[in-house]
Image (tube, rainbow, N blue to C red):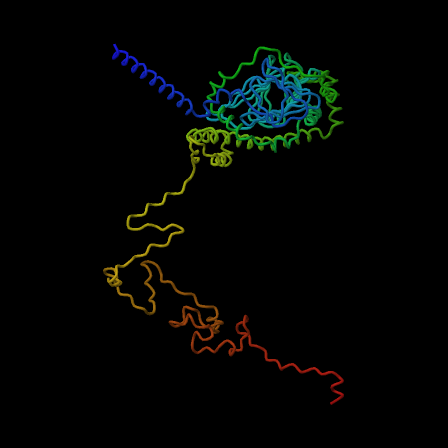
Length: 535
C-alpha cells in the first residue's frame, strides 16, 4: 500500500513538473516573438500623426469622447478631425503623404491600407466642409487616394490636390501635380496639372476644365492659400521619434489584406459637422456669381449672353489671373518633389527599425521598381538603417560591385596597411645564398645601353632633331640628355659636355638664346656743386 502511494505521489509530481516545463517553454516562446509581430495588431489602427496644430483642433474616434489634438499625437482609423475658427492642422500618414485643413473644417479618415513590401497604398478621406490640400508621399505601384465630398468623389494618384467644400458655394477642386478623376452620379471628368473645376451638386455633370475662367480659379486658390498652414511646415516637418518610427514600420509590414481586416470599421454614423458658420463664401464672389449663371454645368455647347458678359468682364478686371494659376502650378510641382523625398525617407527609416535584413532587401527592391528616380535616396536610407538586436543588419541594395581580390597563396601573404613587410630570417652559421640568374639568361654587365631592334613590319624610332641644332646653335645648358656621354647626367649643365664653354663665358643672356649681351660702361659717380667748387 505504501509503495503504491509513493508511486502515485511520484507520478503526480512528474506530471506537475512536466506541466510547469511546458508552461515555461510557452512563456519563453511568447517572449521570443519579434516585437514587430506583437505590436502590429495594435499599431495598424494608427494611420498617422499630427505634425502641425494651430489653435483648437479636436479628434473623435468612433463613439469615444472628443479629445484635443496636439503636435505628434496619433491619428487612428475612422477618426473625425474638426477645427475651430482660425485653427488649422497638418496630418502625416504612415506612407509619408500629408493632408492639410484650414479653419472651420471637418474631415474623416474612412480607409487606410499601406504596405511597401507589396507596393500597395490606398486611402479614403471624407471632407464635410473647409479648405484642404493633399500631397502624396511614398510612391507605390498600386497607389490611389480618394477624397469624397457631398457632390462627388475625387480619385488621385501621385498628386497635389487643393479644394474648397462649403454648402454656400460649389465644390472647387484644383490639381497641381499628377493625375486625377472627379466623378459623381452624373458623369466624370479627368484633370491634368493646372486644371480646376467647380461642381454645384451631386446631380450636376462635372464641367470641362477648359471652361473654367482663370479669374475664378485664381480667386479660389488665393483664398485656399490664405487659410492653409504655411508651406514651410511641409519643408521642415518635425522628425518622428524612434518609438513612432518603429511602430509605423511594424504596421506597414502587416499584409494589406490583414490591415483591412484588423482596421476598425467606422460605425455608420452621420458625417462630422463643422463647428460654426464659414466665412470663406464672402471671399468667393466670382465662384458664387458663376454658379448663379449656371456656368459650371458640364455638357454645355454654347454660352448665353450673361455668361459671355461675365467671362469678358472677369478677363478684363483680372488680366494676371492666368499667370497666378501657373504660379500655383509651379509651386505645387516643387512641393510635390520635396514631399515625395521626405515621405520615402520616413518609410524606409521605419522599415529599417522593424524589419529583418531579408524583408528590408525586398522593401528596397519594391521601392526601386515603383520609383526608380529616387534610387539614390532609397539606397542611402536603406544603408543607414540601424542593426536591431535579433533582426540583423539590412543587406546592401543590389548594384554594381567591385571584383573580389584573389586570395593570396600559401607562400605569400600581402601585409596590411599597418603591418611591416615579412623578412626572411637566416639560420646562424649558414652563408647568405648567392644571386642566381634564371636559366638561359645572359649575365648582367654594366655598360652603355643598346637600342632594341624595332619589331618586324614597323619602322625604327628616330629621334627628332633639336630646333637649336637646325639653327647651328647649341641649346642652353649643353646638349640634350640623349647625346651626353655616360655618367654626365649628374654633372651641372655648364660642364656636361666638353668643348662648350660655361654659360657666363658664352656672352648669351639667360632666357634669350643667341642674343649677345650688351657691354655698357660703368656708371659715373655723381658729385654735387659744393664738392666741385671746393676742388
